[in-house]
Image (cartoon, rainbow, N blue to C red; front, side, top):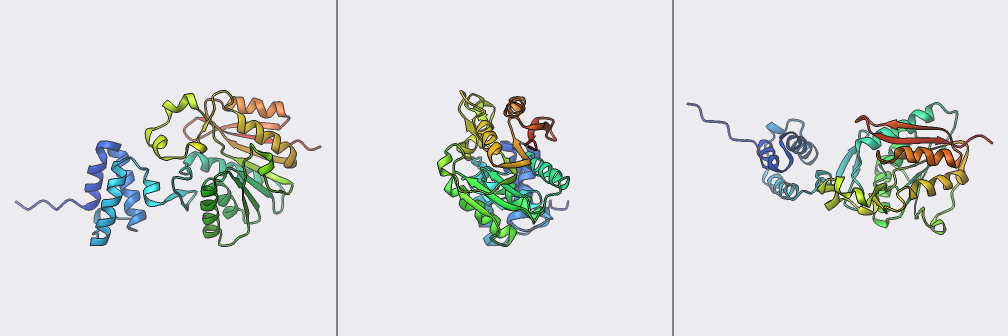
Length: 288
């Protein structure tokens, strides 16, 4: 009888990861590893060098401990771009791509040259940088409370945009005295912390263990604090006809809609993500 072909490094990684992640997720993670770490689109055919095998063993160990593959590899895909990530920032998610698409869609309907756009809570910079990469005339501004996240967002912007044509600054939207001077804006976009503490049990274990709580959670007694503060800020900084875009928690998205209506925004709209969850809210500052 012919001898069985030896198991490949890719198939072995899938087998090793399956007890923790399940067969489908294990294969998906292993494919990301081989495509991004070992630059191959044919992982089952990849023969690893001694150096690559050493790297694979380190990757395997970290994955088996539950560390997200994006942190292990130091990068994440977003809107067709590669963003550097580390535990100082949230891993970019597909739902947020849909928010970016909505902003770009709205801008196409507006006759605005060189719109001034502010991203509040930059994280990795995935929202702000993608928007400017897709719409190069945007005058881009960003605020971030975490110095480590700000440094990473700046690194991503310089690498992906290829220039320094943006202004990212350290600032806490809840502390007005910490904010830099900003011009009148046409767009404000934010994916703020929005998970109340009492919903922690719904958050996957690997997210709780590895992603920054600062970017995830708000206190139970005021879960809409960022939406309210940013909404009031937008009333002051947006030009008439300017737009405010939020990513939000499916459990209180309708409350965000009601909040923007109460603040006086017009054309307030709620959109579902591809999974059918209420995820994004838009409001327009009425023309005076």
